[in-house]
Length: 211
Image (cartoon, rainbow, N blue to C red; front, side, top):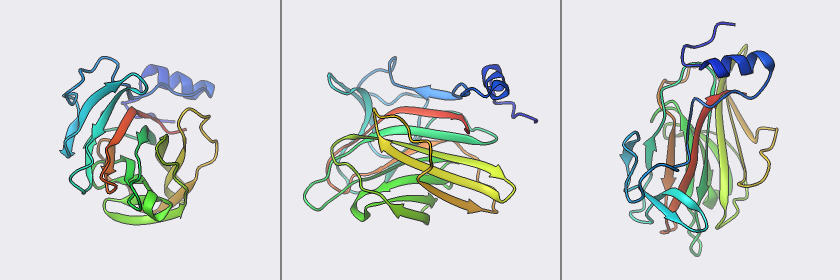
């Protein structure tokens, strides 16, 4: 099997032995400076800031206003089959709910999104919804999301899962979308739509070989 050049030696060895591969990128903000956005990120839109509190540690925060969709790109532009993940925290306000997600392939790539108002977990390509499944979002608690893009004989497989942060990651994928079209290249990203008028928090950004 020919491996992309972006794979580190540890990842090659892990694949050969069947073990989980080393991340291509991970950021828990342990060394970042609160009150700023790390310079390595490409903010597409939104007033993101790194914040810290005693309960949740360090996280990026998107303010509750204005009511629109905002995002930033992180990590390298990968090659081959990859997966991206992050943790998200949001709250509802009355009948208003946030939406948030993690993506691969830049702005026009595939995004796994919790659309809390619709009670769904969705796969988008750019701004176009491609697949949707029922999902009951737990208000005011951290949620982990993982999106994966890989190639097989049927074409390109886009997979996603969501689970309560702090609990074991489920083995099965929650949502799957198959396409013949090669996905666009680009950096992974995180996205938030604070439609509830309350902030959205983001933490533990990760990019790894698909598994």
